[in-house]
Image (cartoon, rainbow, N blue to C red; front, side):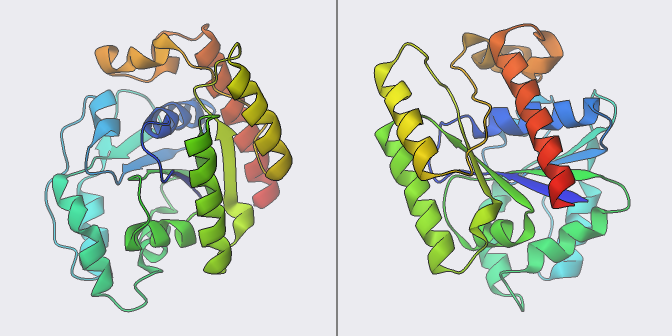
Length: 250
């Protein structure tokens, strides 16, 4: 089973759009996929027309596993399930802090899903916390949406430095360019500069598109209602690139 995180320190970079569309594309490619919405905002569950998770105790690994399992919901799409979020997830860090080996608990819990799913996709909140550190250690691949601007460049550099300082595997970080405006000179220059500085950048870029914003109106993945638009084709290409990487990792 592969665990893929959609993560960024910075909000508003297309993290949830990635989680939703990648999960859909992976399930469409034949992978049994579980999307876990760890962000208290609950945007991923909104796109799939699923209600918030029921509150559950997170006293230890057993109760954490049981609570997540009870909240698994089917989506309208074959092969794709979701564990929705809850505002109580804002206390995730407090719960993890009380457990032994507090930075590795999430991996232990997620491994219990291995008999039922080929891939788990984690939609993560935009911060660095104890939950984030659990995500970093649990994930086989961490996808980082990067808008080609100075602030996004800065947050990617901060994340890279954090991984190196904490002796985390930097090779798990897989940034890609999101919300790209091809006619924007700054975007083009930043893409060129960052691609040279971070060779682990994925080749696929996601263009800025109003079609992606319509996901909130339709409440479904972009790939489910607009397969031909540029953004949809980009998400599918990104999924194919990730599947190819999965084969090298496994």
